[in-house]
Length: 556
Image 1: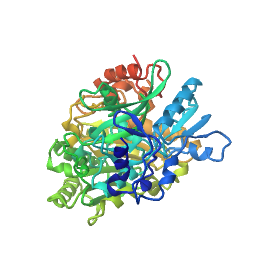
Image 2: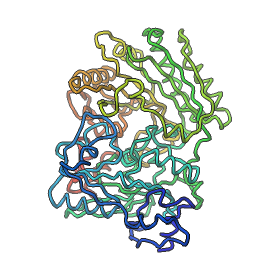
Image 3: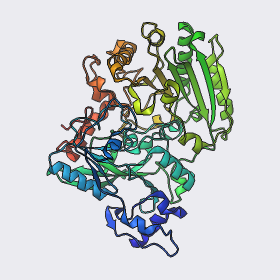
Image 4: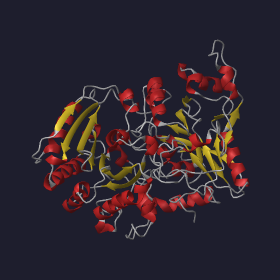
């Protein structure tokens, strides 16, 4: 065991100290804690520091550090006031913190990157926040033959270590500061998902701290193996959403069907580069008919080019229509230009977008940009476009899966909301994003993610900085969304055209009968037929409903 542990900390030649791995709480294989290994001769001399490890640290109101720990990564609409923020450095420390909170009768929750769109962490009822931000190691685990990622890591860290260490990556999101904890448990969608599926489709195992019927916390390792008695817990965390069943302290990633023990072959290869084509139309160039044609072109292309195995899955695109006064309509497409034929795909895609649109866009195409730098240093679109400092950013986002594009009536509604002079605030938008491809090659029950036949994801967002504007800004985006989906009760119900919403875009309005007048409850919109199985797992794994929020899975 000591030799195995020692090999894991050398990380195929990457210094363990540089990756911040604590040696005091190493969990190996079936959950046996190994003693801190003795370093090999000539090992990094920072090793004595590593043996001390981090935490636990408890920060309460009045502590100088408390305000820093209340700042979220996104959306200042919500600020919590817990009795304590518990910073942890190991799974055993998470178990201890949960046990203490449960014994004291205090509601507990977990935070990784702090990007939740609703107040699931910053709820006034939450008294203890367990902060995983110091648990962020990324390494190859020879005992699991998979890449281990601790629950507090953010996407930029994961991309960087996987690429520089082994030349591989995961098909995750494009925001570098998003935490893996909520991202992966909600499915984990990104620009490479058309080629490689969701991150959850590449999830082999999880380590989860759960609480039993007696109120005792413990850690459980659950894998995708058919004979694993804990497989239900893996399935629930492969898209069932964060904050539902326990606290994930570690993920193990390996692509389905990957064989052998060579780490460079166990996850998707890092792209050779990125080439981006951008098309931009100012609102002065687009009347209602031109806007409708442009967005219809985007939807039609995705209906025709998103089947599993299609060559066009090499291309990922977005369409962002920003309210009049701040911008116009931006169509952006990217490929790996080192793959044969992809540069022509960009040309053909641009032609498809401009078909029957009279006004010519401002167009540009980059050279071959380095993948890692471009992916991990992307600037905040909100700060750049709207000029809202991140410390003041307030927002509301509503989403939808689409199997088909929008109807002319729906697009007329969108155009009216984006250009009407009766509403002068200019920081709202509609976004459309490529989906489908490899994602749709999986059965709706392979993981907890049931949305396996959509071709686009849509979002409707508004951003502002002044709390006094909250009612007006919320009303605008809520009414836009309601009116776009007016024929299905104001929400994208699962049917032949729409397919509910992405669980990582939580929207409490879907549980509000004032905004959801359809017959589909919020649970169907997010989980469809998988919800009943998730409820069974919830009842078995979190019988006291310790881990809950406004849209959490309800036990039977």
